[in-house]
Length: 281
Image 1 (cartoon, rainbow, N blue to C red):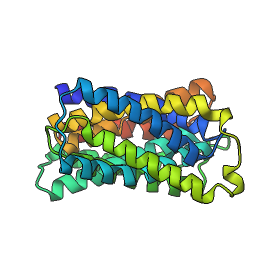
Image 2 (image 1 turned 90 degrees about the horizontal axis):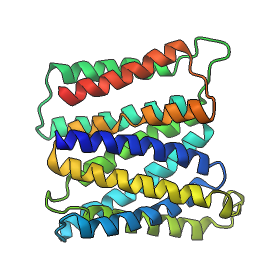
Image 3 (image 1 turned 30 degrees about the horizontal axis):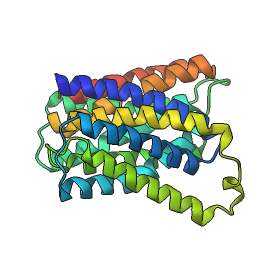
């Protein structure tokens, strides 16, 4: 029950972070958003490691670092796709893919999945189709580029979850600290290498505060996720984490007034139902 609660609260925080990250990526490059948010998230993880009992070990550092590598690419792709929009379509698509990858890994690794779980996979696949359908003239339309980036981000997020799950159960937040160090290093190096590109010459100030906010929210959500994985099953935590689009979609509708067609709304509900079935299956 504690693991489920941690996963759900963490998912809500991820949804908020992704929404703010999409807004920040419209003001500065996705690489810069990832770099700044990574630094802010590192502060959260470091402080948290002194609060939560954490055992330092090479496996904890290694898997945290590996998660940092794939996580950097995942978040950069995710924020870039959300900046293209519409958030209400790309966010749940990436979420479902990010759940399928670790669930598949968990099954191949020996975790069991009951009838509800397999029903959730089927329902989720249908939901992915529905959220991409454009049944009305004025409905929101997702571009092929946005869809591709969202799917890619989902695959990498799934790989991130798998890496974090490999860390020792007594590691506490040490893997997250290593994750943020590696992530910040990668993003900083990327900026240094391609700083001459026009897309990266835009100033840092316009989206700086939003990027910091992303890091604080995302870092806290990741801390809850990691603790939940250490207490529960990867398959359950991955689908709970995949529920984050609820927060993103609500904020997109309230703040950006994004319109979702009825058929798409059904797909979103089915996606949430699929995540719930996977969690109990």
